Length: 104
Image 1: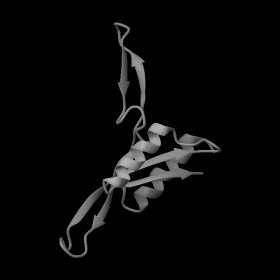
Image 2: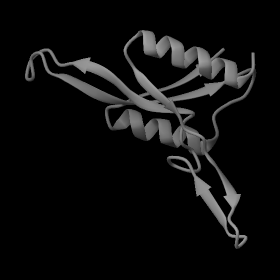
Image 3: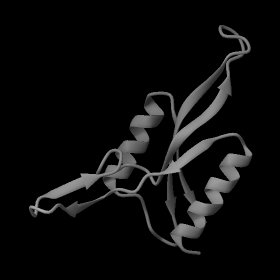
Image 4: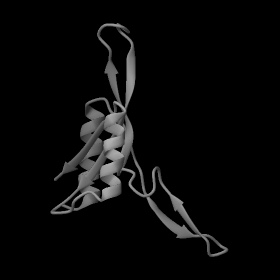
């Protein structure tokens, strides 16, 4: 399976479970003056998919639904996350978000 198909499956499955994720393309390109411009959230290192997962708090905020920041890095075959991607996922998780590497 190629990464675009894995990402499509993750988006479908996460949507079925109530999460809202968007594709985060990360890269760079040259503008008309020849300067390199980086794009994407947290470049380099931003996960393939970013968004939120709804979560209902049980005690202090009974009945209130919160959005938990979610970052998903899709990998196929033997590919591994880069150091920057691992750092980004770790930062999300340490801040209370959901951070995962999903494989085919």
